[in-house]
Image (cartoon, rainbow, N blue to C red; front, side, top):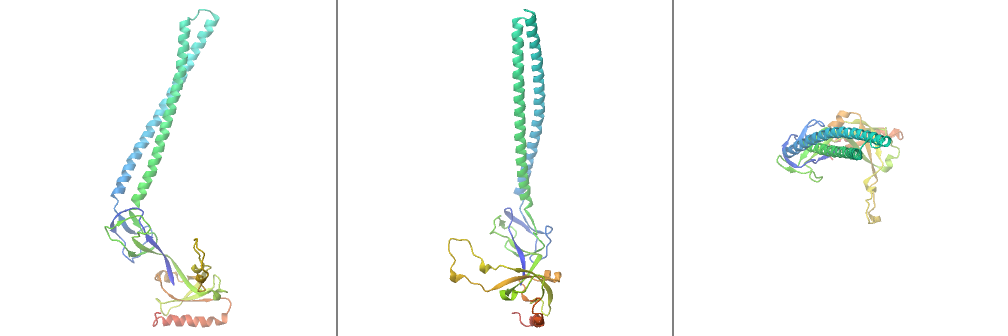
Length: 317
């Protein structure tokens, strides 16, 4: 059987569909061809609103940065004033000690008060600088938050225009223009078939796969291509089957319910890639594998696969 991956089309944002571009079963290119569009007015308004807020936050941060420069300059001025007051006080104290009465007691007290005031001025200037730095950090944090909000708004706006997720086609639309869609996994708007990769698989009884290994040659016949036989190679033997899978639960498995048909899946790589791309999903057929053992019997398999290929003209089953 020919299988392909399918993508359930679920929008990332909610809103009414304004335009459906993709026609069912028409080939499309990944990230190039439009699938559908969702009304984007609300998302555009949100984007512009957050963009304006971000610009204002950036300007506020710049203004606070200028305030930091001014506060730093004020700190330098206050430190210079403190240094001058300290020097003047030290000179007065030295003069008083050397020449009693050289400086009046009142003048000495004034110089001490002036020095204390200059110290307080330095503390105040440093506090103002710290406040300015904290305010700028808060403004920058607000700007970063708004930048994240703007990125989200831009993402939501972009999601209003939905492109093909891969090379392939839409095989089934469940909506029409004007339908309200929501971003929930069980509300898909359509099914997209990925044609970028095709899986050619067949089931075989487990015992006959004993000598099969990757790289063994094979021949395939498809019901949609009667009379033709295609060469291929074994890609993988899938060593797992859903019949052996158990779900985690608090209930013990019933022994009577355990069973298996005894089949495993083999995946093939067909040599004619163009043919593989043209095969419809669900195409059925016949597959034979030629191993290194039992080579004298290969001719029987070759006859059988060719007989089946020709019988597909008459017997569709």
